[in-house]
Image 1: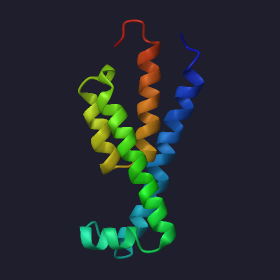
Image 2: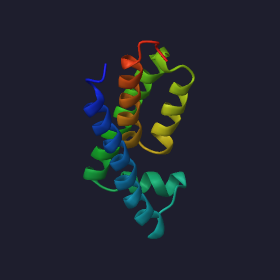
Image 3: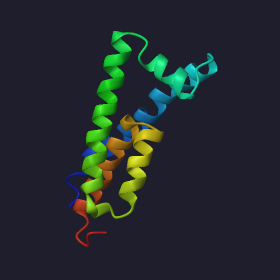
Image 4: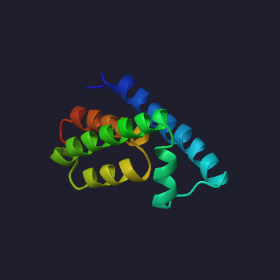
Length: 112
C-alpha cells in the first residue's frame, strides 16, 4: 500500500522546485521590465532559437499533459484545476503534483 510513498515524496519535492525555480526567474523577468502583455511576452518567448525551442517544447508538453488530464476521470472536477494551473502557474509544478496525486489515489483502496 505504501510502496509508492518515496516516489510521491520525490514528486512533491519536484513540484516545489518546479514552482520555486521558474517563478524566481519569472519574477526577475517582470522586475526587469518584462510583461505578460501578449505582444511583449511572445516577443520575449521567441527572442532567439534557444528560447523558441524551449517555448515550443514546454507548450507542446503542456498540451499533451492537458489532454491526458482531461481524459482522466479519476480526479473528478479537480482535473480542470490541474489544466488551468498548467498554463497559469507552470507545467514543472503541476505535472509532478498531478502524478503524486494519482499515486495517492491509486494506493487508496476506497478510490477516494
